[in-house]
Image 1 (cartoon, rainbow over the protein chains, first blue to last red):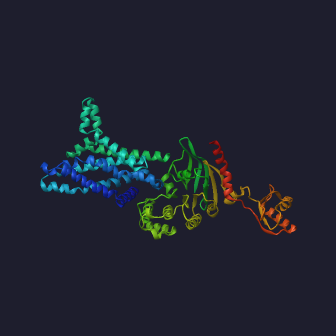
Image 2: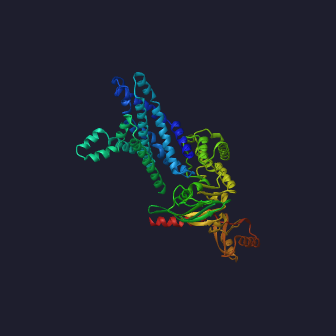
Image 3: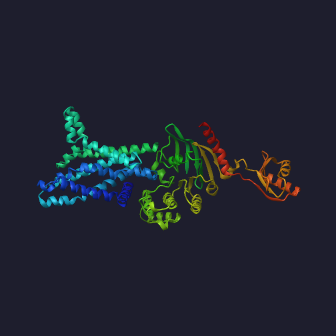
Length: 244
Length: 320
């Protein structure tokens, strides 16, 4: 546990000593503000909820989260520090989890900094703050899932750009599998069980149901298992890389 | 402290390390020599637990590296090839981070960092970020990392690579001093380092150990070991050669230079260089030669290294 914390602390410092964390946080705040107020017109809707705010998160995360996570392991491989880290008296799991938690914390900080939106809707009306809280939990879990996927792709290569592109593709797949235009297209010819199992793979399906204010254990389990599976695969990839 | 038995590593069809075995006790400094690509770094990566061996056993202290890696790794300090470190951290931050991973906290952490900083002369750059440092400082920062927990076992992959002569000297002195209490393995291309630092050396070529002994023993394997070289103020090298060849202790002699006259005499099979030198000294006295220099060759490591490893390289070239 101590080792995980030590590694996570170093990573968080690394994010903030380079522009990565600041750029991510600023761009995330700017874009989420722009989409919420300008594109989705939060004010004109006359409803006291944050649906237009959260609806954009899967798309914002699609590009921004891989940008945060792409250096996680590829940088270690490029600098050769992986050799240093993994010859320390720690298990690879401690390193994998520590790094993952650090990047998740960066996203969480960005998410917390969106609090003015919550204040705004509370000032203008009487929203259900429980639903808003659930929305934040769902958003955080989704970011975690994307980050875990990025951790996995960054372990595959020493090149950050490759890591970024592959993780965007995987994240896009997870979005599109449950995106209405895609599922509608499937509905016309595929049997219902196939449509359902494809869309069950999607972050959209689970994220949307959490946004409605229902913290269903199945949805939470979905995100946690994406995280668990991806981090496990990260470990397998790193072991395979070391074994040559 | 370090026991390696029948260590093998295959990368696909390529055999990088093919069954090496050796032990290093406390108080020994073992030099790892070999041409590029001989398997030195791969061996060190296996010993430090970074890559798993295809076959073989590694024991550090009492602990098996494969069965109990955490306990084994605790005993090791490791300087990887090219001395990697986190570019975005300060020297102090980096050393504190590695000390923390080594399980040090609070006061003992501070003391360990100060000690390593002092030993590696890093005081001046303590709060500079690693990426702004020169290569020499970066190297020493990573070296400081390897000794931060005062480990029993030190594994150093080319610790003097890229340093200037003064820094090389400092690092060698450091290694020799620490070698009194630790078991150390270090790899190098620089043969003079072996003499300066090692108590024993291993030459690796194409994944196998081709020579293992003290630097003096290795030098004995040189062709010129035991030969005696003379420099004389005489007119004819040929005349001198014919006299030298008549001495019973001389197997054969060669003229190295006509002017000044320099010759080298080789001893008979069971003769030593000292006996030969005495016999030739007596000869020079009898002949009233103007002897300017006479010395018995100890043998040269670079020649041994070349004769052991070059034959194979030449064979490889021929195959192409």
